[in-house]
Length: 296
Image (cartoon, rainbow, N blue to C red):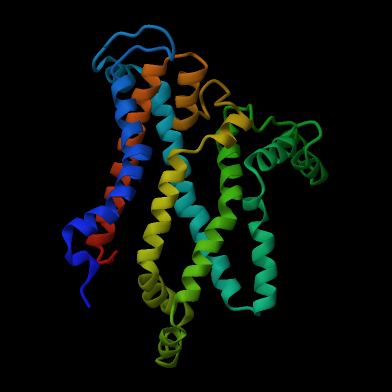
């Protein structure tokens, strides 16, 4: 039987609709954003070409942009090196208990992820409240009155950590789901064979399970990188980037420039840099995976 893809015209006709949708939904907006990033447009009225002035200002004279990028990198590092290892350990535990208990615990862990960001963020805003929040009451209960009176989301020393913790808590269920699904795809025979050969539990996971799952783990890390860069809703609802700009993130900063200060051209320049940074980090991650012998 002749393969449909042997006919180049027929294959092109099948692929063309998908390419057209992709171009309309992804490529065209990026090109439009690139065009307006070279202007001083305010989102309405006339505009002038300023060429690369917006980019020059962002890179050389915009400390808030660099603070936003640094905060995104802090969230990224916290997600990859704190949330993910914890989720991996929890997933191992869930894979070793009965199916009914595992299902119940997974449902409980996933509840924060299925609730809307508005609900979970406002919940933590109330928890952090120094007057009537649960955290404040707990700290007073254990005799930490000085900490109980701290305004966690408005104190420059704690605001960023408090916001990052909220986002780690919100995404923990997703991380557990990803790692649990990955662990359950692994053939049990590999673990059993290693155990029979005398390998300890640590050796089984460090030398067999993790290397076997690394292509999946690499994909999960890429998702974490992109999610960290585009984090916005939690920041906007919890602190709006304050105090000052200490908890500012790129997506929230972009929104503020576009829709609060009406610097639409400048905001588009930020968005173009955002896309380039995301692509660059994704390519670096993939290259590191390939250099480590991980096949995609």
